[in-house]
Image (cartoon, rainbow, N blue to C red):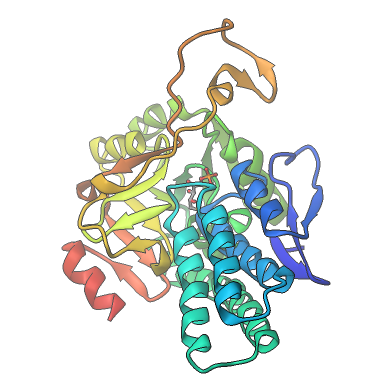
Length: 345
Ligand code: MRU
């Protein structure tokens, strides 16, 4: 199945906390359950979170008992606020919620009956879901042009099918290159503390039989210094107009190591990940998560009880380290602000 799906009035998703040891599909029948699934990272990855939020809004619409537009809008605002409070960094979440709210405002102006409006909201969520797959396939085609036969590619976190509806962004590019017959090899950063690389990216690569090697995060520099890495490709949770990129914690260190070792560092992300309201990445909120993610590994305590912990889930990679941004509409190079605006228009 896909990472996330709508079936019989419910949202079905693969519980990513359980992978790779168990592939368990759970379902959510209320928007509150969707919000909980996002918060607990049962579903994660910027585009997947956006799709989950859109489906959450569809659940909210169908469960609303409102009899008029005013009360219905109030119910939808309440659902939006609940879903928006789950995770602060990935802009796709807010982008999807805004898209649904804009549709509601526009349709209500036409004085449409509520039943019809609910179906339109569901249809918009389905559009967001289906567009995601197309977008990733296009991104894959553009990005694959940067990969040569025989290349070794390093990736961080999971920017694959599990982080999207299907195919993936950074991993989608790798997947496309492999499908095109290029003989490639992938180095997968384990990605402490939640281990998205070790648990999820390896799981995906194994299923597709793409050759890979798992490493711990602190091994990347050594590999690069030994000329074992030809390029780095990562995803993004939010990109500012100037090309600053916020992605999984550890991405910034990788980008610096890549520059030091003259390895090109690419970011693959849909245009919905670009926050046009931000001139630079400095204003992007960085989520801080439960200290237990650091003191424990898969539920087992590894640090003394009571230690002080800092656990930012993301970091900021300054635009100067980003060789190019791969999108569904083409590859964006420096100067980023000018070229991002050009591609968006
Ligand atoms: O905390 P996560 O697992 O949601 O973080 C995911 C990432 O940082 C991904 O690299 C990013 O969302 C891009 S996914 C296509």
